[in-house]
Length: 314
Image (tube, rainbow, N blue to C red; front, side, top):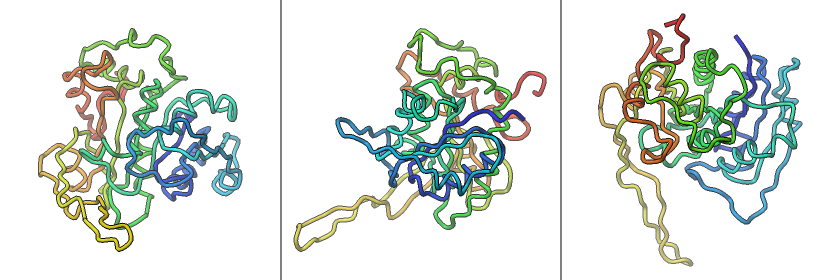
């Protein structure tokens, strides 16, 4: 297996166990790895950007020394006092060329997030938004979440992530040709629904992947579209003596519709849900055709996307 260079970020912050444990596993595998993550937790910030304010940037050699494999693969770890999307933009659009020129990522991974990013969550999640931002810049990407708050054992999520990386290793074979979008919207993949065409939408950054690993993983995968998740009683009004009335947002009850072959259903049944997501709005010039999105969830025998594999392996 080729150990290609990676960019790792998240929304839980540089000190998150999910980020650091995944970094350790990737480094141990021999992936050249650069981490640029928010200095503090940035959950549910979506695609927030920090405009007109300076963002402090630091290298964390002490974290690199603690989690590094001791092998030859480069490992650099940085934090930015900004949002997940800020981190991705700084990393791709100049920051890494200045601070870690020895690592030129071929794939961005965002995570491992603590808590699910299913259904409508993908619109609010800083984790998913960082992966989307990477894709918008032409760097293929994957967001990863441990879909529970009941524990912080990331071992299954790491195993699932490594399996997905193995799955796409036959596709990610060189530095992305579409990085920084040199041809703008003129470089449009074919709208055919064969595996090669679908893979090109991913490799050019017009589609990315979202992985959710359940609380108790049975070791299997399903490639599925988003399900339907509803948040009820999402606001709480508080009486503050000094400040008057205040509100908190945080649902008291979450309802997932039981729709077969969706991410919510897959996770509820103990499977890791892998969901292809369009990077751009549907009516953007680079919006993925609905026929391609539907075809992108066709599964191989292992439950992963059929388009992961070269023709000799299908």
